[in-house]
Image: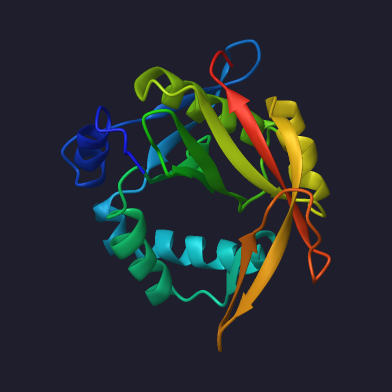
Length: 214
């Protein structure tokens, strides 16, 4: 996979603390409703952040394709060895009135596209659509800065709340894919299969797409 070298040095600088990025979140009338701040290596020494990420992951385990019991140490290792070291990947903390309410990220960024994922609403919010606006803000930033043509996402077919939110964002496609189960001693991983094929466990997801011009 060809990575987007245009933006990667900037992403590296952000993660390592050499550059700063704050993405403003605005509503349909361009009113400020919150902001997104990237997770960086400095967060590895912030136990309150690591605890929130861990608790949110455990509370939302069923909504992920990789399911396991998270611990603070496992969260820290995941950030340090995967999120911060994988090209084309970044995770943002979402703030509303300076209150940390969740996170959203992207991965698999290439010269043409990327994947939005890892969206968790961890706390109650004042604005019920703030995650809709956060997705739009991150998508616009990627379209502008990374010069990509489209973004992809995956939504479980039984996650009604996520389906409703993503339809408000403007995702299209909605192609159903089977999920294929792989189990280890402490983790279940669901692999996305070929579209419109059956799932042995009757579990499916939608692959959705968002095009530049949002």
